[in-house]
Length: 350
Ligand SMILES: [Mn+2]
Picture 1 (cartoon, rainbow, N blue to C red):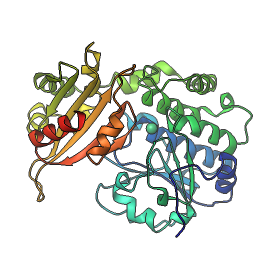
Picture 2: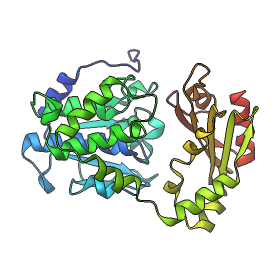
Picture 3: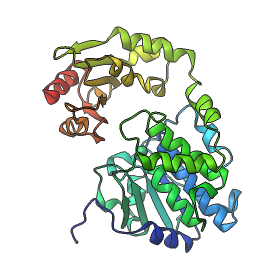
């Protein structure tokens, strides 16, 4: 087998032409989809179906997601055909599509339930991603733009090509909306260091297409369940500082979730809270995910760092622990109890 590298080996024009020949397309993304993952897959699925004049049961393209799903996902999915794949269970749908598009990841480990299903179809698969690392053998075609803040930035251009439009501003609203949502959420609603002139250019085009920024923000971000604040209270109570208060660590146990009536998704964004402290360079939250599994406990780490001259590359830290991500936002799942993994993390940060 030839050596494959995690880099772009095609163009968006070629991907659009390739998709144009397919009678059935399945769009996939990483397990536990976020705004960019759902936005990129929904946007492209809608563009393909609009270009082909197909919808409902006759749709050319459909999205499969492996949960748990975010609380706002119905806001975004609306009436588009979506199938949920149970975590850890291979998909058993009666559909063998002519093309598979994997968005916002290219890592076998993140494909969870459908990794083996994709492995049997890599020759008709295309990856569209913006992560610095991935497994090149996930797909024969790859378009990877690590300078993009969100895959939805790349996807806006691909959707424009699929629909044969002159500008992103001409995209139909149902395509523009999920794409805007992906860009907004992957940039922390335009606050993070990945914001660039291109981000604003694409976002401006999507607003011209009719996206309602305030409605999307309210329906997704102003939508917490009361339990979430109770869980935040637990996380803040666990806060400890290390390394002369430059590292902030919070931790949540399975018991914290149970006693506050919280669901796994309720802790999203907690890791950003400690970043607001002036001295803090790295913020981490450790979450006990399986207290009593057969192989012992598993702890999830979420890492964020602050930009600047002395910025810490948390992607490198996460990689030391078997995970990955971006320079300012990364994560890992590590075998061990909260205390064991905390010690490992502090070692990796040292
Ligand atoms: Mn993304």
